[in-house]
Image 1 (tube, one colour):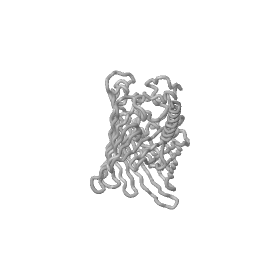
Image 2 (tube, rainbow, N blue to C red):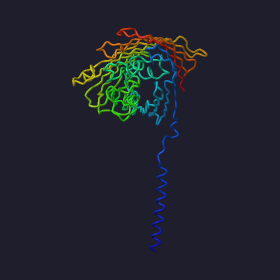
Image 3 (cartoon, rainbow, N blue to C red):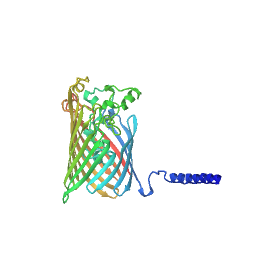
Image 4 (cartoon, helix red, strand yellow):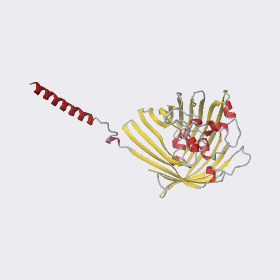
Length: 417
């Protein structure tokens, strides 16, 4: 009888083990679900350029695939959406692959949406206006976002000390960061409404925290970069941290927009936070933007400033004195576009575009980095989701001893699906 009971116990344990194993196997996690119906979208941007010898890319005429975007979008629920966006491209001698956005958008109610993950930090009119190639009216971006890309990058370039500390342009129109965002719009009356977009993110960092270009120059990623080894060779915005933070301070950023009627909007943006490892120095960004769309005419303007606190001696001579100082970048642009043709059989639309922009990277100094520029161009779309653009830039340096030979033209083709 004891042997029978023992055998029965063993058989029971075997059966229980098989049942539990099967249950565990059935509970194995599976990524995704059939009802998600994920969407995949993409676009690429081909560019050609030819500038005078002191202009963009040192006057070297070339063709390039400027970037390629892939976007994966899926709804988990009716009010919860997931977005993964990748960017790949090449800037002169280096290639890159970036996670542009990796976020969950959660619609809480008709007035409020929550974003968690990596997303565009709210500042200015938005990435749809000045970052994504298929949406830009011109090929080039305004100087407040792209001056650095258009400067020579030779190692013997005589750089001001404040360049060693922080880049010459704002991060705003392609500033991506990890954090939490809260946005929505509230109707006031009839067609009048107020838009808000707030975020708490890691924030920016000082330029000398970057290893990327130090490795390009010295081919040694383990060495500690010296202050002079800031991002000279690459024009990628390494002051964005994106996936990590160099301190415990968090940056608060936001934009409030007011639309009195359809086609008109005014916006006010602000961001503030500490950018250095010791959390001694802060950075403050202020922006004002406005858009008017009336019939075939579209007008966009923006003013932005950035005040960076830093060691006064480092700013002046590169040697620390322990005394706090600061420098301020200011810039603005105004762009007008007029739709000449629309809805033809083999021509979706044709826009004529003109833009004036100016930048002063350090309002305390008058140097030849102060720039203003007039850009004229055409944007031609033979079919929807396909866009040709051509532009000519006339660049001036009001404080340069002699006028630089740096005018030039650009052309591009963007296609999206």
